[in-house]
Length: 116
Image (cartoon, rainbow, N blue to C red; front, side, top):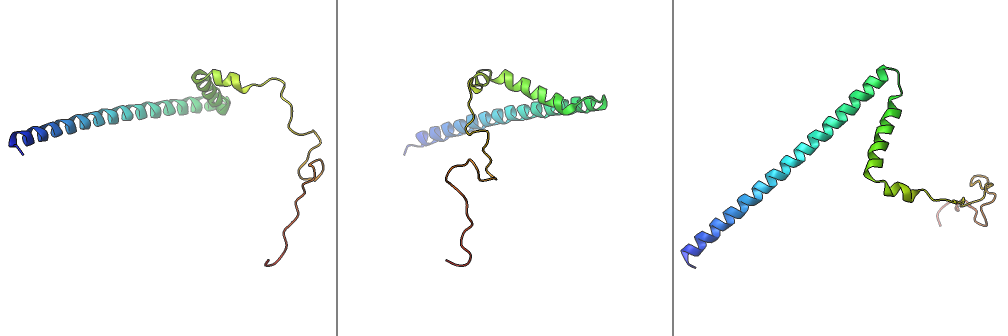
């Protein structure tokens, strides 16, 4: 092995490690910033909820409205696909699983007592 080649290889390896470490540090910084923003948003929601509760309004309903606005802004196409016209019930109106009527031929019976 030539000493110059070994030295160049080690320098290239060190430079690659330095680049990777800088990239990792940048990713960590972005993650921390995102977490700070999420915590700030949660804090704002709690403050708004507290203020509405002090005013005597329904704070839970207000929170649900805020969440629906966020969800509707995120995906409008999924809301359209969920509503299906001409929806028929799966079973008749007289079905009651506890009464044992209308369920068909299946019926539950307890197992045998004792060892088999």
